Image 1 (cartoon, rainbow, N blue to C red):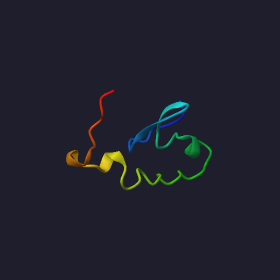
Image 2: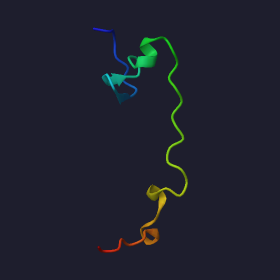
Image 3: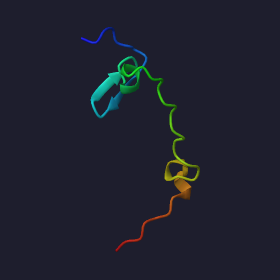
Image 4: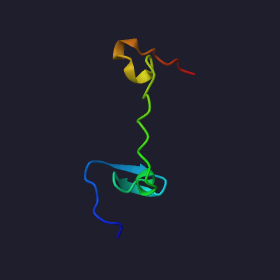
Length: 58
């Protein structure tokens, strides 16, 4: 057992699910990297239903 687990949040890594105390960076003694920038403005996730373009049928 690697010790008590952090209950703040868990994330899926290549090695499996890890709590905030057992991430690869935490185990190596490094700080966690900052979160990425997310989706860029204008991405399809930000479009309202009336902005979607209809797909053409083949």
